[in-house]
Length: 435
Ligand SMILES: [Zn+2]
Ligand SMILES: [Zn+2]
Ligand SMILES: [Zn+2]
Image (cartoon, rainbow, N blue to C red; front, side, top):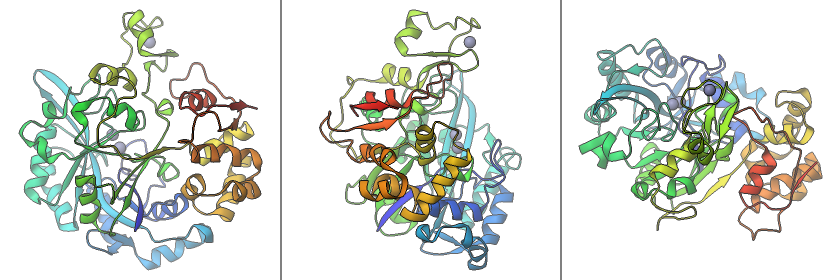
C-alpha cells in the first residue's frame, strides 16, 4: 500500500515544543496532513514511554494505533474528508555530544525499536549513561558509534538514522561540530548505516553531489516541534504496513517499495545559507569567502550553512547525480501558500478559515498539494491558488510552461525566509508572476 511516513517528530517532553504534542493530537494532525505512519518521537523518555504504553495498542507487527476510546473523543476535530487510519512507530532522537579526534562533536541521531520491551531495555541502558528525564531528546555524552552499537546489541531489529545530516551545529556532516564522512563518524559500524535524513535545509540534488553518500537511501521527515508542522517533509513508501517492511524498503532502496521524499525548498530551511540571524547577515558561500568568513556586524565568524558545507564536501558539479536516485517533490505547506496568496500571516483568521474550508472540500493537505486537480482546487479555493499548486504538479514539465502566481514577501534580514517567487524561479518554475 501507499504510505506517507513521518519518522522524526518530538513529544511535549522535548525542549521548545508545543504542549499539544500528545498522541491524540498527533493522531488528529496525521490525518489532517495525510500521514499514515508517524513516529512516536522521544522513545528515550520514561514519561513519554508511559503515555505510549497507556494510550497505544498493538496493530500490525511493530506498529501501534491510538486506543479506540481516545480516538473517539478526538474524531470530531478531524474533517470527514480527512479521516483515515494512523499508525505509530517507535522512534526518537538522541543528541550525542562527545570528543572525537580531539574535537567536540555534536550529532543528532534517530533510533527505532520494533517493540515496547526493546524501548524499555534501551531506556535502562541509556539511564546509566546520562539524564534521560530532563528532555525528550536527551543529551548524552556518548559517541554516535557507541549509541549505534548499544541499540544493535539490545536488538538487531533496532535501526539507526543520522538526523538532518547537514545542519551546522548538531549533525553528522555539520560544519561546526560534525565529521567529513559517515565513515569518520561511525568507523567499523558504518555498514549498519543505510539511510540518511537530509533535513529541511538540503534536498536530494544537493546530497547527490557527494559521491560518498551514494549508497545511502535519503529520507525526509518533519522534525516537528508542534503537530501543525507534521509532514512538512516526509518519506513515501509502497509496501506492507509493518515496521520490518518500512525498514526493508529504506535498506534496499528498491524503487518498487521506496518511493522517495517530500521536500521543503531548502532555501526555506533555517540553515541553508551562511550568516548570523540576529545580525541580519545572510550570505551565499561566495560572499562569505569574500569577507573572509567574518560577520561585519559582530566581528565573529559566521555560521557556515548547508549550501556552503555541501560545496566543500562535493565531488560532483552542480546537477551531478549518482546512478541510483529516488524521486522527490518539493512542496510549500498549504498554510504558507495561503499566507502568500492573501498577503497575511499563516495564523491569521483568513488563512485558517481558508485552510479548513479547503480540507473540508478536498481532503488532507498532502492530497491537495500532490494530487488534487486544477479544477477541483479552483472550485474550492479560487483560480490563483489552483495555478500556484498545480505549478508543483508540473515541476518536471519542460521549463517555460508553468505559471505560478504569488505575492512577494521577502524579509531581507531574516535568515530563515526568502522570497518565494525567487525560490520558485531558482527551481526552474519559470513565469513566476508576483501579484
Ligand atoms: Zn535534531
Ligand atoms: Zn528533532
Ligand atoms: Zn554577527
